[in-house]
Image 1 (tube, helix red, strand yellow):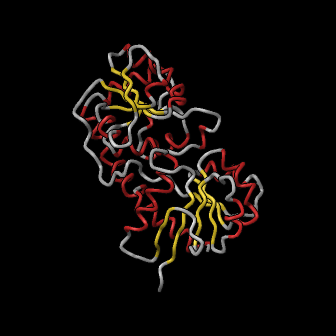
Image 2: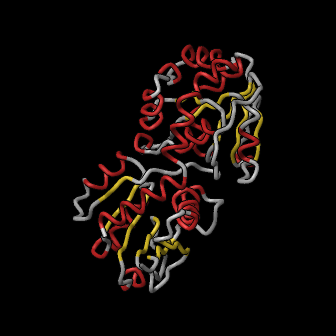
Image 3: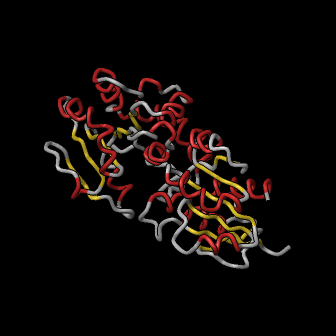
Length: 300
């Protein structure tokens, strides 16, 4: 049996962009490294490919190329831009994939006669094994797009007043904040920068916060840094699955208690012992690549 070719049209050109890194490049690499060689993955539109996956943006001049592609076409999206872009090619797409059940519900409500399936974000930063928790204390990290910093701004005074150092990993030039440490995000150093802290604080910002994925939470936990999370559906669901509700916070007192608890290395080990293996077994790039192939084989 000849290999089937999966051809990708990424929204962004390289791994410095989280969305394409997680939903294209890591999955592409994982497919090509699977023991079973039924599929070959290529980046860029290949005319003779069997499957074309378009990631959320229809670039100028490419609509005709997509329509003329003879194989099976998938449109993948992980943010609101996808709802606008799908209009351009809805009549010729065979399947839609998205990152959360919340986004699937929003897409289904648009009324397109196209099946939509959830394909979760894979584990970021090419993590292939879990890390032990760092042997540091009183260090709290937040990471993400600088525009999302507002989602945890309410936590900052409480973190500082309890003698914790807040370490922001983001676009350093865009954050001007007294009393915190700001580190420039870098793909190659991020895990080491994150592990200089023993706790991370995460929340989602914006009107679509309740349909965003848990990708930041799973990477922090896999890297050995337990999360305290603000109210956000994907974060809450994962925390509750492992009886970690006390680390879902919405006021200063619950934040203070959560930080105090996770300042103990033994408590951090207890937090991580069940959830880390689950994350590796459910969200590794290899697991998500195999899930994508099963989805293709079901709908193609």
